[in-house]
Length: 309
Image (tube, rainbow, N blue to C red; front, side):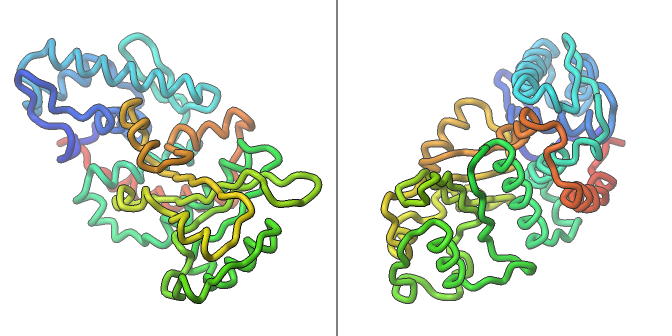
């Protein structure tokens, strides 16, 4: 069994100090990466042994809350879910390798809860970000039929200058370039824009649905919710109609948190389960190359996950 994260699952006497979002991630991760099955009693026993709870009835209540939330998520992606849910029990249906998109997003989330584990991995954040952008692009391409997806994020394999990115977007969408030199510097690299998602019409004219999307895979995601800056992009491209924002994250949110983050993003929020919903359109929705790269990235991280003694 995986050890509990040092963050979010804390001693609870009289009130729950077990964060439901983190607790659900722990249950998913334990079933997917370690134990093949967890029951309510298994989880309650672990909580009591670690002195998280003294009252077993309170522990059962929190476990039931978490299993209810996981069941709700499961219903959104049941066709490709790696889990089977029965009353008081979660079982593994697929290996983590066979569910590599789910595994990748879950591992990215765990890195925020197991901070020591994340530090020890010596993560290449450029590679991590590039993989998450590719996953988001492939997910949107499956779910948004008839839409075009341009990847614009700067990376070691995509070192395009910001001015060239602006030129490409303007050319693809038929928009007019604004004053790029006045409002940006080349240090901005990609202008905090990772993907452009748009739906062209047959006439190829402007005035179409456009989303400017930020993909945030790391712990600094809260600082990126305001990006990309639409005020900046309205100056460097003279849009005929103002685009909307999109924000992708590997995290999974409860409803209240999801709504709050929608408001802070002020646009389309793509969390873990919205990204994984691409499987409703095609079960094998990831490209072969991206699958291979995700499995390679995940393998040492799964092996190093903190486990209980």
